[in-house]
Amino acid sequence: MKHARSMTVVILLGIFALPLATAQKNEIRDFPPDFHQYIREALPEDIVPGGELALPPEILGMGGLANGILIKDVVISNTDKNLKNTNRASNSEPSIAINPTNPKEIDILAFTAGWGSDAPIWHSTNGGNIWSLDSTIPNPTGLTESGCPCDQTPDYGRDNRLSATFLDLDHLGIDAYSGTTTDPTSAAAWKWFVKNGAAQPTDQVGQGGTDQPWLLVNQDPEVQSQDDVYVAYDNFDGAPDMRIAVAPGSDPPDFTIDNLAGFSQGEVNPGQRLAVDRNSGAIYTLFQQCPTTVSNCNNIAADPKTIHWFLNRSTDGGPYLDFEWKLHRNSSSLRPKHSAAAKVRHRERSSRRSQSHRGRSEQQRCLRCLRQS
Image 1 (tube, rainbow, N blue to C red):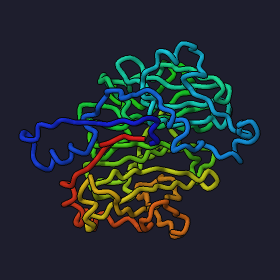
Image 2 (cartoon, one colour):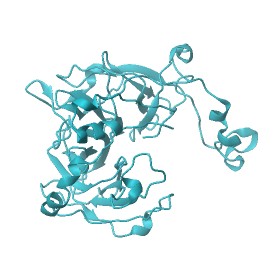
Image 3 (cartoon, rainbow, N blue to C red):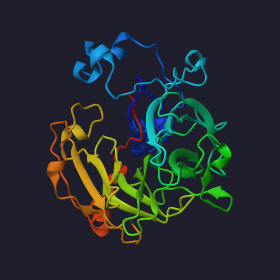
Image 4 (cartoon, rainbow, N blue to C red):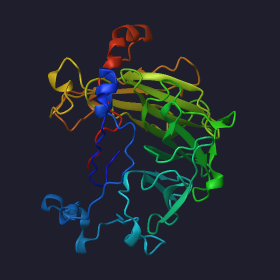
């Protein structure tokens, strides 16, 4: 996610009590998560980085007013007029959802506060002119850990329904949990898929080692009146493996499909993200590899790194267990800003992958090892 302010994560490890492979993983992964809020006072460079305006004059227009662009600070333009004096959270890694039924309704999730009490959501009903900070996201049913959400992304579907996924601590480690609501300002309105009194994890594979769940809602490619909820996540129990969980046409979301979209490697976070085609119902996943055959990919401190990008898609919405991620052959559509080559490949067959990449389970991996703007 994008980061609003600089943050540094330092994890002290008792490496002598851990196997070497585990110690190496924990050196670069943000687990256990660091719940400290790292903040600093604003600097002039934050407003004019490098002496340049965030928007060029031709966009800002006469008098410095951007034509058709509204810029608001959710802390200052807030129903709580004193919030600008009391909010000391980093408010970093924001993610946003806009209600297609009512585009004036907008919600933002960020690292503002964690569970212990209900977690917060930034909510606007007038197109972002004024915001409220509402502590109205309950811990998923049956979970009692405090501190998280540790990663979180929302998206709206139809009928004013907001879906969101949250990385949360549980008895296995850390997993994704996804819920829905039609009233983000009410804790009682949130719904989770519950079995035996406990919310069910979104991730069905490698539970306890999940990172960066990324949620989007899209119409089903076959049943156009139905919305499906997709959550991409990194399974660090594998290469790490790039997986997509799908909840077809269910509220609260019941993730009955969970399939492999590819794998990452090297000393980088995969950074897996989703995109949807709302006309066809297709869904895309983009992630990166740093090939371990290249020396700078075997050292987390090496800079720059050699990055290969992978883009896969599904056109069937995942209604069957054979949820095939098909090759997107138009590699010219990938235009990375880095000098690294962009590559698009088929995912390997499960049998080949299990043979070729079993040894990678010992490689160093990162959940959110270093967050910085």
